[in-house]
Length: 136
Image 1 (tube, helix red, strand yellow):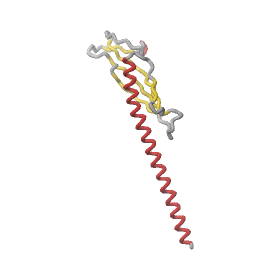
Image 2 (cartoon, helix red, strand yellow):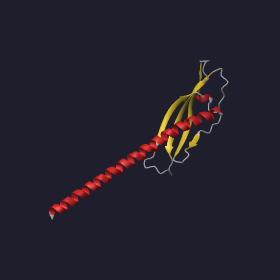
Image 3 (cartoon, helix red, strand yellow):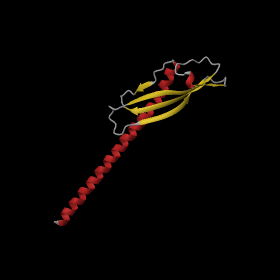
Image 4 (cartoon, helix red, strand yellow):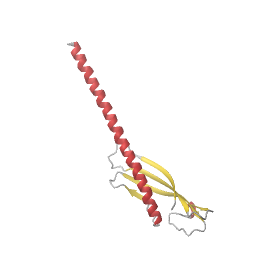
């Protein structure tokens, strides 16, 4: 009788341990998937921001198609050839540096910030910041 109770307690403990490990693995895979989706969205937001910069638009805020993430792109620095006729509303005198390379139109240093939205069903909030040097 005592060994039967001991065996039931042992099996119950093993079941609880197995379920807790399964829960941890499921959470890990869900977090990994969401983080990877945020990184893919970051690349798309960067490309969309470059297109808007080329069109001389200053609205560089993006939402993902499923509404889970939002992206803000900020032009930190513009490196523009001083004799270039490149005129962009995202480049102000305070964030523009003149360069001396006639072969290049210049570069822009962009900071992209991706974060999960509050209404997204994500267990752990995601916030990723990346800098990128791009040609306008």
